[in-house]
Length: 141
Image (cartoon, rainbow, N blue to C red; front, side, top):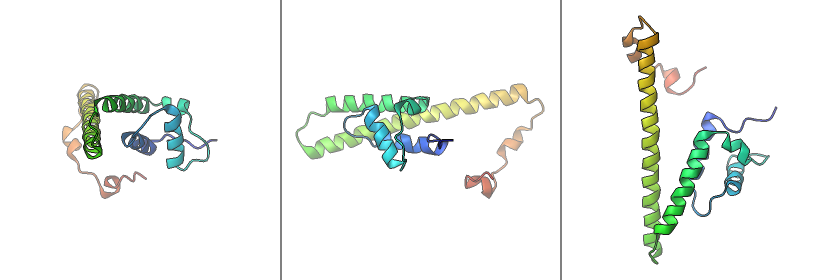
């Protein structure tokens, strides 16, 4: 059975590759970069990556961002251009993180509503139980 390329951990890496991308962005270039940076023996295909909505969205967002950034950088000074690109990168990262935060907030509200609706007699004070060291480190087993 082939090794699973896209996992929860690798999605973070795949999005980091996109967030740091400069220059022309195509699925072919992105797949080659993913293959190289993850140290894989077989080339990752566009079809593999497009199965994941978060990767598709991150790709299209980055592509749009790079298109807009290229159109707005008009200065001939390389330092100013580099700083403008850095500002645009950081603004895009803030936008993406806000969207992620909103999604987590929505998920939290949905879970809370479902606890109230479907878990009659659930003791809400149990939600404040601190995590053990085992779970704080991310190790679940």
